[in-house]
Structure formats: C-alpha cells, structure tokens
Length: 134
Ligand SMILES: *[C@@H]1O[C@H](CO)[C@@H](O)[C@H](O)[C@H]1NC(C)=O
Ligand SMILES: *[C@@H]1O[C@H](CO)[C@@H](O)[C@H](O)[C@H]1NC(C)=O
Image 1 (spheres, rainbow, N blue to C red):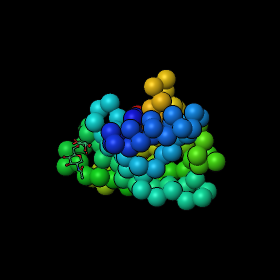
Image 2 (cartoon, helix red, strand yellow):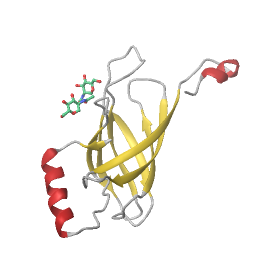
Image 3 (cartoon, rainbow, N blue to C red):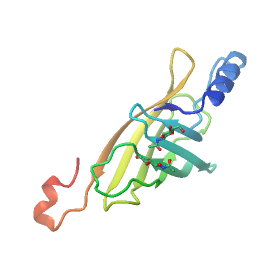
Image 4 (tube, rainbow, N blue to C red):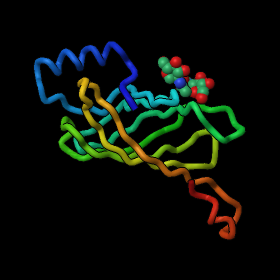
C-alpha cells in the first residue's frame, strides 16, 4: 500500500529533504495496488489505532461498504520500519480479516506498507471448519 494523497506525498518528500531519516507515520489514507482504500483516523500514544477500510474486491454478494478497522503498531509511533497489525470487521459480510505488516520508506523516499492477511469466513458447523480460513 502507498499513500493515497499526492499532496501529502509531496509534503513528506519535502520533509524528507530536511530530515534525511524519514519516518513512517501510519495515520492518513493509503491505497493498495487493487484500489482498496484504508484511512487511519485515530492513533493513541500506545500505538493503538482505528479507522476504515474500503475494499475494491469482494467475493460477497452484498454491496461493499466501508468497514471498521482496529489495530496496533509498535512504539515509538514515529519510527522507520515499524511493524503493525489490524483487524477488519467487514460490515457487509459475516467474515473477519486480520493483517500484519511493516511500514518502509522506499528508495524514492515514499512510505510503503507491506502486508499479509488472512480471511475467516463464517461456515455452518464445525465440519466445515477446514474451508473457513483463506
Ligand atoms: C479509493 O480512493 C480513490 C481516490 O479517492 C477512489 O478513486 C477509489 O474509487 C476508491 N476505492 C474504493 C474501493 O473506495
Ligand atoms: C467503497 O468501495 C466500493 C467498491 O468496492 C464503492 O462502490 C463505494 O463507493 C466505496 N465507498 C466509499 C465511501 O468510498
């Protein structure tokens, strides 16, 4: 995922010139290569945060709606290469997703999030447990 707002990016690049050790700050809006958007609106001093995740892809028959995300990052908050995790509580399906990731500053000075995720679908009964997590 990369920062969504070109204006912010320019701002961060400008700051990067002043402060060569550009930090990863998770707050704000991010977009992934599929066009999904994530906005981290609130981050507390413990590194706990929440926001919304709007996916561009879904296997659900339901209309996609922005979903609540709740996460936590390692401290200190303004640090390069920090690790984080979050849960997305899908508003339009019975599923839940967890992500883990790390924030990097690439060679061009841009902040990039590298993440992996697991999706748990709700299945009928324990005999279907085998197919519930993808
Ligand atoms: C993500 O944001 C971009 C830019 O605002 C918008 O064009 C796109 O439709 C959004 N995608 C989703 C899934 O909300
Ligand atoms: C969320 O994403 C869907 C497409 O996946 C789009 O239709 C909808 O407009 C988006 N909502 C917002 C608030 O960006």
